[in-house]
Image 1 (cartoon, protein in one colour):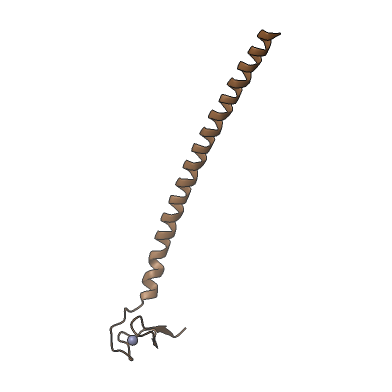
Image 2 (cartoon, protein in one colour):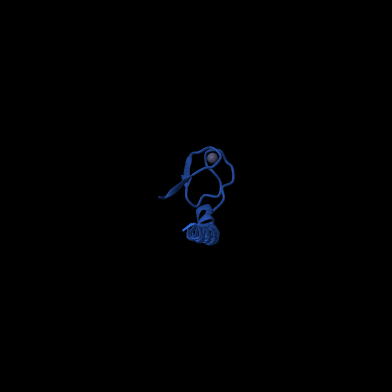
Length: 87
Ligand SMILES: [Zn+2]
């Protein structure tokens, strides 16, 4: 790709042009490179957030499941004790 699109008039201009030859406005040189440099930070931040969120969800889910499981065991043992008393 030897050209880029002018953000002001959407015409194709040369890649390293500083001024658009169609509308005469200034173009940011090597804009794509700047964006490429910023992307990894955002991806890393997104991944870190996702990982932290997933870990928290996992821990919370496990804790909730364990509490329910413990409650079930308590209910079962209580029921067993009740049944034993009846027999
Ligand atoms: Zn232009």
